Image (tube, rainbow, N blue to C red; front, side, top):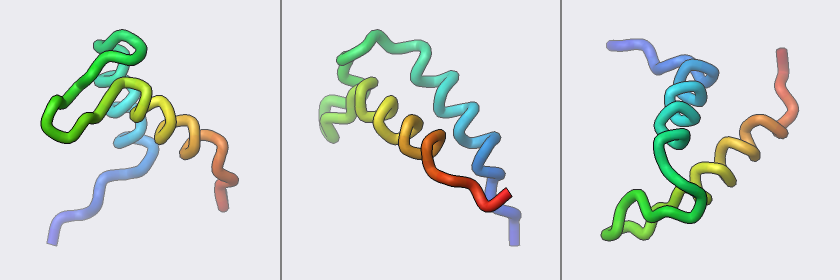
Length: 52
């Protein structure tokens, strides 16, 4: 079985992807996903207390 990606690595890739879009821009018309949606998710993960 393959190992799950590290959360920090996945978050870094998501942030890099997000940086290619303007605020409010729609990333996927079918789902309605926007750049702002990604901001909400990444902010939550950054603010969530870590067990480290």
